[in-house]
Length: 313
Image 1 (cartoon, rainbow, N blue to C red):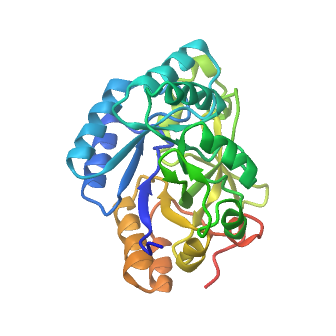
Image 2 (cartoon, rainbow, N blue to C red; image 1 turned 90 degrees about the vertical axis):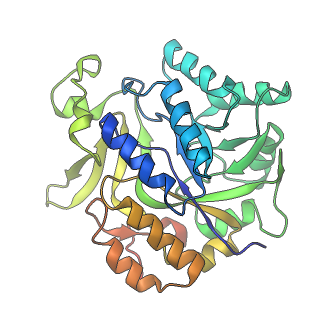
């Protein structure tokens, strides 16, 4: 088994200004990441980047030696959003990540007709058994991103490294979410707009004010959740930089890092140094605590513990 753990830059969860977004992906082009997932996955009102814009960024990343995947929204609620989904699925230039089962249905039909590349099963598709994974693999999947709450030992039983599920392009690859605020839930309501006493359709795009989401605290003042439009995230940052051996034992071939507004290039470099070049995890954990959004580093889900369980030294 290949001992290298490829790094994947997950889709941008937040709405950043266009110049910031372009600069971010220019930095990613120079990073050790192997794969980059592009696209608007949270809210279709964040429409500064159209499908053609994401395609143009994808071409630049390919020219820099990256593999590119286009992601669809994780919650499709309108005919307009379904049309966008179909445009992404049918573009044919890049592989696609299915954000939900509506995308899965479109992609499976295209793959059966020989009109689509093998696709990725995104983390919001509920796959919790080998039998379910086999059913999805038959539809044309090549990569599986397990739900975030699955422990690594459970991942290893669903898609074992010794006997992986047969996918559309050979053994199904497992890609584990390894860094970032965890996307926990999606709703038809926009909680950011509601926080500002605005209607969803007249939101003033207030989520642009929060580069890493809007932090919520408990009545005791403890960080609790993060609001990101219609998405709810964890306040703590999931961080598996010290779990290299467990990731390999689980059969993971890639680790997904979710973008943040500060220090992400260094986050990528630290993960690569620890997971693939033997750098000490403790020193990386200490530096990661100074980068990215503020918040505790946690890895409880990976260890079959509550998700808020702090990273063990």
